[in-house]
Structure formats: structure tokens, C-alpha cells
Image (cartoon, rainbow, N blue to C red; front, side):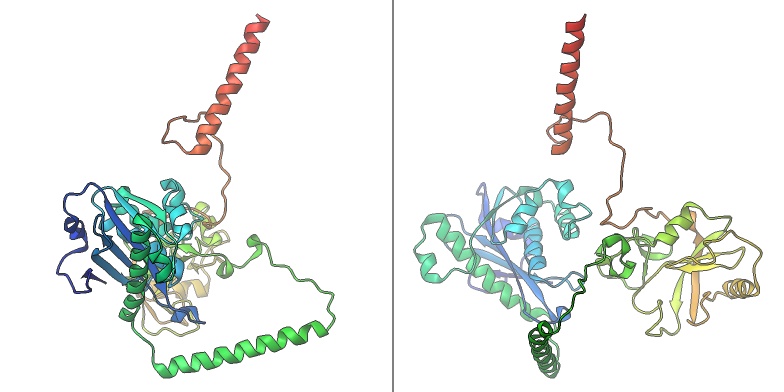
Length: 419
């Protein structure tokens, strides 16, 4: 959802991909982009937006302005607004373009190698991946312009510094105006949130003043990452794809019931299921999917996304996020296992506490799952014996190639001297 305006603020009947035609036949385009986000104590109430301006060559006028909101599936934060503005500039650029940004973190991200931008430990890897799918991203060249300067300070600047400062001021104002496109909560609800926030801040101030009066020799430390529960580990981006069970993440294996699932919140595959798929222990495993007739709030089946359900058609053991019976060797089914298999033949889910109807079931080997751990965990790999010194190779590979070349030269020189 976005609006296309001219320099005076009137709506233009033109697609964003056609904005570059307004600049004529000039060799390079000049654009400015910025983002904005509301300030709320609760993150769920924050709203973010972005704005992009196309500058008229050689003047301070703006040819067109493109503005919109950050989609609801992405985190609503100032950083995400800045990254979204820089990414969406790729749909406007059709030739070499100089893009002015006021966020140095975004500039550093866009100037990194492509493999680094989409690394697993990058919080905005999904946005950069979307940006590289746009044809105009390869034409963008970003540079920094200082933000939030007063008008009298801008008037004292000269030439291009003044032009881009005025453009940054304009896109900042339009990004704030684009926030009105978001749905607004009820005023009474906002007043209650503000009241509760004030009470919480008052309690924290009182606690910070009283706690030092009590002597305490206990020193707490944060638990290391590997000892944290899976629901407390750092989350990353989902990799959704259409499978035979529906819309499914290739990393954490959860299944979504909606067409527009959330993009963030991936916690990686459950360790128990990963071990089970590597060593089935004689189980004949099938993956199931369906819909719930009722969804209790305390059930794992509640919500738009749920853990992948795996069932053994021999013993009746089943798993959804963890493995208890499936972690053992497959044996003759127990009375409870026979009940689960009976429910499965009638098209019902194995969990009797959740009324679930199964409409899809297939062997697990037909699902293209990525057997990877949590995205924040560094997996040990073997170091290759040959490294490339090509210009497009990563820097660390080029340095290793140069190091091996120096070692080989020294060894050859030593052999020559000995002979």
C-alpha cells in the first residue's frame, strides 16, 4: 500500500516503476529516502512508515514522492522503516542512482557484499533479500546526509548539500504523514495504556530507590545461549514455501493457516524432531496437517501457526514440537497407541484434548525440509583445501589463497636450496 505524489503534494496516477520516466533522459537519478515510527511504550502499538523522493536534476524541487507503510508482518520499528525505504527504492531506479539516507546502519548494510547482507545472523536479511529481487537495486549507490536539521541551518549550506538536506527534510515529513494510513486503536485504549505505563514507571523508580537499602550478596548472571529454552532463544526470519501440507517454513517446520504469515519469529527446528528424522528407530513416520474445530487458548494448536505434527503408523506414537514415545524404538502399539491409530483412520488428530480434523497426511521423506539447527548457532564445517583468489570471492577466501601462495613459495624455495 503506497501513494504517489508530485512535488506539490497532488496524487499522481502512475505506477512506482514508472517514476523514473519523469526525470527525462538524464544519466543519473537523485533520490532521498527516510522512515518514521511512532513512539509507544508497547511494541505491539508501534507503527512504521517510509517515504522516497525523486529530485529534479540541478534544482531543489521534487519531481515525485512515493510513500507507504511498513507491512504488518514485519517488525514496526524505526530501523525497519529505514531499511524498508532503502529496499523499496530499488523499484524506482532504472539507471545509476544516488540515494541519500540519514541512517548509517542502513548504508553500511547496503554496501556490504550480498552474501553478508543475507547472512543468517543479520536481523534484516529478509528485507535485503527482497531488495535484491527488485531489478533497480543494482543501480543504487547510497551516501549519508545528516538528519533533523533546522531550516536556518539548511539555508546556510551550498549546492548539493543544501539540495539533499531539503530533500531529507521533505521525505521525513512525508514519512510521518504516511503513518496515518495505519489503522488506529481506540482512544480509550490508548489512554488506559498510557495510565498503566505511568504506573509501571513510578513503580520502577520507587523500586530503584528502595532496593539499594537491602544488602544482597547474590550476583545473578544471564544463562548462556545453549541452556536457554527454545521459546527464549533469539528468533530469526521464516523461509516460507508451499508444500503438500500447505504453507510451511523450511527451517522451523511450522505450518501456517493464513495466506500472509508473519515473516519473523523463526526459532529453528526442534532438536528432538531433527534427531528423529536422522534416526527414525524403526518408526514409519507421516506428517499430518488439518484444522481445529475449536482452538483452546492454552493449546499448541491455537493461533495461525502451529508446530509440525508427526505420527507413526506402526505404534501410534506422535510428536508436535517434542518427542517422547518416538524417541524410543518402535514396538507393538499400546491401547493408547491403538486409539491414536483409530482416530487417524477416521481423519481425526492424535491429541484428544484438541478437536482437530486431518485432511492431509504424507510420508516425511516427501517433504523438502532443511535439516539445520538454530540460525544463530555456528555449525562447524571442514575448511576447503583450495581457495579462490577471484575478485568476486569473499575477502577471507582471497586472504587464505594469498597465504597459501606465500607458504607454497617458501616451501619451493627451501626445496630448491636443499637440492
